[in-house]
Image (tube, rainbow, N blue to C red; front, side):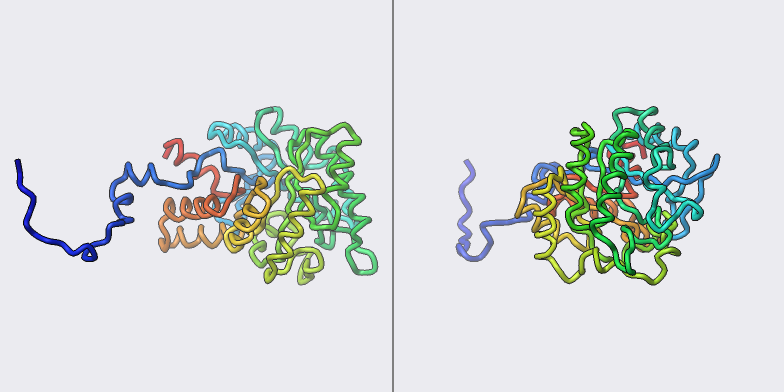
Length: 341
């Protein structure tokens, strides 16, 4: 039998707890991982436009396109093949259809409603999420109706409720109020229930900040030129505030939201974390257009490794407490997770 070494070690010479032991091998790192990213976490935004056989790249969002509804059939087939559970549809409305009160939002045959019906025809099981807000439909670019040069909260609520019903009747599964009007979740919930649409979910943009990260998205839906230099600070949140975000989230939960969104995503991980700890409620992060474009341009310039940086950002959302993530990288992530690339 081998004799014990006579060499003496001081009890204080070496750490008894070595954190690196669990990091040493791949199998151990996998076992010890606290957060796991799966395809089930992904929601993919899709921009739609008019015309036929249209696929136009959004210059401020490399690799992201507006597509006409005839190409949506193929796109939905592709997303379905990747097993992504849900999409979010965003329309680019023609300027001649935009009005001060956004009446096109209430047209049962508008671009968005057509896209909803196509999606459900191709794959009835794919979750369809639609924004409830007026900014794609107004000629001033605001999310609500203007009265005396101010957003009229209550008049806007009336239109939003009708918009939500139009989208729900077209077949969407989740309406997502992104307007930040006071009381809109409760008003929309009541309206949906009154119309017998009790199973339509509400994913509320509960903490939507007046952020500079939205620029490319406004290009994508064509609201940037309408909004011009006007500000949305009277209804979207001040980036300096976090306690206010928790109040907003609490109100939306109490009004009947089924899940809430924090937007933007990575710059507001602290809000996600605080909300998860405070409410233990389903939380979705929106990795917005500005976040996507910064990462994509850095990847294309060779400054960041594509797979590593994308997956790191996703795990950051999971670590903060997210149950799902709206991201333009969803197809890339899904293909990696099912090892198609």
